[in-house]
Figure: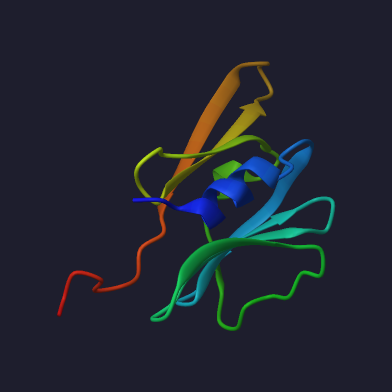
Length: 117
């Protein structure tokens, strides 16, 4: 299949110096808030599934903080599988012992119950 919009978004997304301030989750989206006051939303609804970067952050109602280990990590790479809607967000973090840690968030942008007729 051809996912032109996701490929274009991945190509144009600027991950440089995106340092994570918080990560939260609700039924509507996963929200990663960066220290430069931008938000990355991973939206999965009954109608669509897509990533969205906003320079005007808006908290999602009833969101729950998750993944504290990502706080202070830097988003270093965003990639999309060649033949699927699977996107990878790679984060790097240096701990207090100067050990480099890598976290990879894998998101599959498919609609809920897509295969059900």
